[in-house]
Length: 196
Ligand code: ITT
Image (cartoon, rainbow, N blue to C red; front, side, top):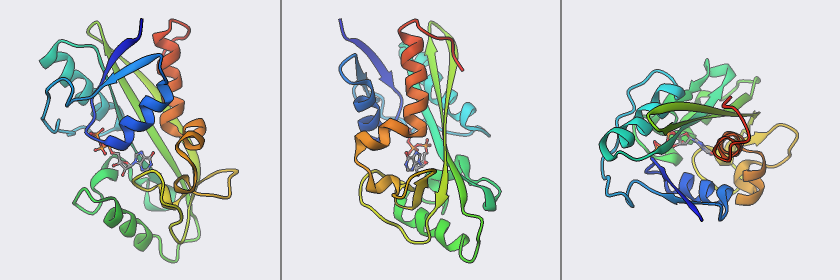
């Protein structure tokens, strides 16, 4: 039987990536599917806290097991900004404007090291279980590619010569921060691993 899982997100790109990673072993229910129209406040100080705020909101208000992903880009030369503010770095939720702000702040900087991080919080039977995924890379001077979302056009993973936005979804899903965290979640749900 296919297991249904609530994924607490309003981000359509994340939902697509995660449904594609899960394949047909699990079916994702979104916030819309469960009738939740709230933009759950992300007032925490870390990916971990924000992921937990989203998953526990659904667990408390809908009495459903649920997982949430909080993620973002950490750039070494910018003191790990935009970090937890990735979705609204410029003050507004606009991928293009936020990406341009990153490039502007990095003008003239030679240290281009960055990483994408995902923290997944799974609320299951009232318990919070966390799964982390990280991928290292560099920030390009000029955006390239039109797949994906967010900062994908400027992020080149280590050992690759293309950006995330130049990869197909399945290529990105083989190596991304979200895919790494999701594989840990899947292994846990299948009873094959401890959280990490
Ligand atoms: P939900 O909170 O509803 O899940 P969100 O877009 O607000 O959706 P986050 O708070 O986790 O999600 O912010 C993540 C932001 O980080 C996202 O909007 C992108 O700007 C960036 N980001 C995260 N993962 C990314 C990825 O795989 N590729 C490109 N940018 C990514």
